[in-house]
Length: 184
Image 1 (cartoon, rainbow, N blue to C red):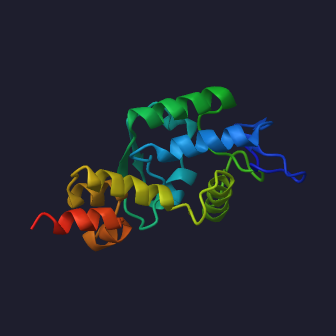
Image 2 (cartoon, rainbow, N blue to C red):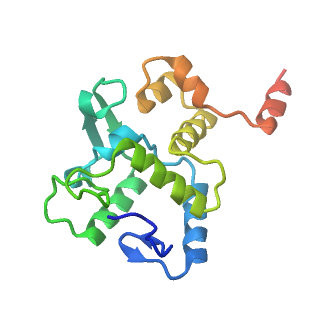
């Protein structure tokens, strides 16, 4: 997969030129509104290979993670379906190739920096101002926390070694804060 935008400012999605940017923007907004969001971690995602498509768990080796600690990433059913659709559309013949090939290298895929920039472009194209490559992680963790998931589970899902790191990802809205003080 090349860049999502070419030199003539044409936008591409799954290798196909987008003729109706407004329709794509609406679809991305609907996907972004789903809760919880699939987890995104750039270092692990850039290591994702076609051979992992369809699996409920993916084991990340130390060289695939930011902290160089191995961990298991659990993939929910909805994300598995999306990845299977993506894999079918891209028709990759070598399942050892990266899921998200870059313009520079089909075999190596994105660098962490170029993948973060691509997420920023996609979020901006969807009208999500200020969103970054970590926005999906924050939404994922906050949504699960709001549904009562214990922080030690969130820590493990995020691949954090310290609960304080996980706590920093969680967002509290003014409405939640107002509701909390009413519990007294």
